[in-house]
Image (spheres, rainbow, N blue to C red):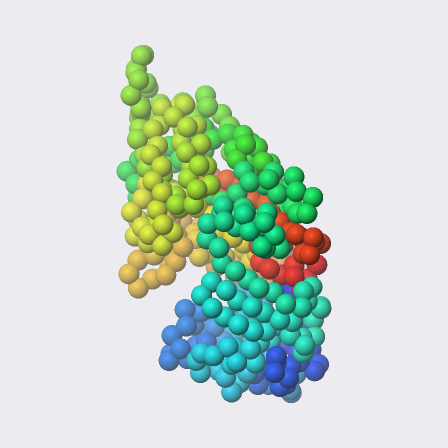
Amino acid sequence: MVPQLAESLEIPDPRHYRVRLRPGLRFADGSPLDAEDVIATYRSIVDPGLRSRYAATYRRITQIRALDERTLEFELQETHAPFVSDLEFPILPAEAVGKPLLSVASLRSSSSGPYRLVRQNEGLLELEANPYWQGPKARAPRLRLSVVRDENTRALRLLGGRADWMQGGAPPSLLPLFSSRATLEVTSRPGIGITYLAFNLRDRHLSDPRLRRALALSLDRAALIRWKYAGRATPATSWLPPGHWAHAANLQPVPHDLQRARRLLDEVGGERTPGQRSPRLSLVLRTSSDRFRVSLARAMAAMWRRIGVEVEVRPSESATLVEDLNRGRFSFALADFPEVIEPHLLSWFFASDKIPVKGVEGGNRWRYRNPEVDRLLEAGQSSIHRAERRAFYLRLQAILAEDLPVLPLWHEDVVAIASERAAKIGASRDGRFSTWVYP
């Protein structure tokens, strides 16, 4: 975590966090930013009238005290190690908290970050550098952020000089087109997101771990990374990327082994009879309607066909796909998550109480239940000592690699394309626009 408004953070004991703000902080209209603004912002999140989806996260705060204008202390109900990452939240002026920020003028004056809003239309934001920002100097005095949903249109804008920078918006197949232009620079960094296969453990076929393992063994991930990603991805062994402090470096990716995959399939559904041409099994793979994802899913389906599993690729618009996954209306799915920083995020996807049902939000769409995993997730958030937490998460990753409720595929590189005007901005590992401020 990189502090922006904070100068320091102390943890006197597991339930108390003391934050010291930088001196001379100001909002974008020049008004001072102090401890009272921070307190008002965090209190507003749990206000029932606001109905914030983040309220449950911040209800664990029992008290926030201002020790002076620059120092405040958070008291928690119980130990919660991920609280440092929970502190990442934009701060508003105390007088603006709880009020709708409907006008550009109110949004402009309320900024506490490196840029402030100049103009806003549908699909367009114009920003200018905040003159009162005390962090690193913004790399561009003005930014025009445009939402362009079609990948070909995005590419044409860059090639035609109507755009200067794009991150994560081009499929690998188009990258040679940009690399061949002297006026454009392509940079990439290993990403901290995860692309994965999600198995519905209540599916009558995929509830058998041998079938999940067979599907994993029949994928040639090296070939998919080489031909679909032009080498810009790293094979994954878990959700936590290489280099992460809790990454289980001893785990190995599931190998490409067609012979073993066929043996497991024989165990699941009986041996294939001589001369049999029909598939042993038919499944439906869900994916988003993004053209690259559909192409990737079809390449994977071709690999599964080699072991006698016929897979129909069924694309859906993103909202429909998420809704179907939440309701368990799928066999297995190709999906991704953009960044994994705090390992407690794993509880959202693998804790038994995070299975999405009516009245319960959660990302455990695969309906995975394991009491030992639940215990390790609880232990990981109940200790503030990194060495202890790491031991819990290493054990957790080993269990998930064995049970295989989800198959981690790879960590995709984050790729940025820049014109000469935006040269040296580069790509950020988390896929955010932070490189416009932080190198």
